[in-house]
Image (tube, rainbow, N blue to C red; front, side):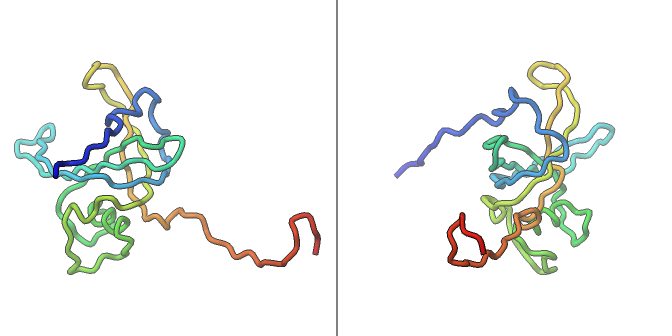
Length: 161
């Protein structure tokens, strides 16, 4: 039996619609992570970074993709992105010191993402453009609506107490 394929929107599917406003928080799903070697300007040695790909799960940005970046060393510190982002995705805060996982364990997990914007050159056109990125990952419950209890009075909607 072979692979099952489903055509997905191109990764630049939201470019025509313009950037998502800065400081927007939206529901998202982590779709993939990858590690890659990057040499930053002014440095001679490459640095290993992890790239995080999220699909937005709510209107008006539904099915658009945003990316975040982190280091690959995980330490239990609030400024360590991989630690705080994994904690948000697993819904465990804090992650225990002996907690082990691999990249694939993070995939297909719902969360909320804080969107940031930055200016840069479009690689295809060379024009100035505003790009979105994931500034932070929050647990689903961080901004989830609060459930409320409504007592069943037995009255119809138009009746009064």
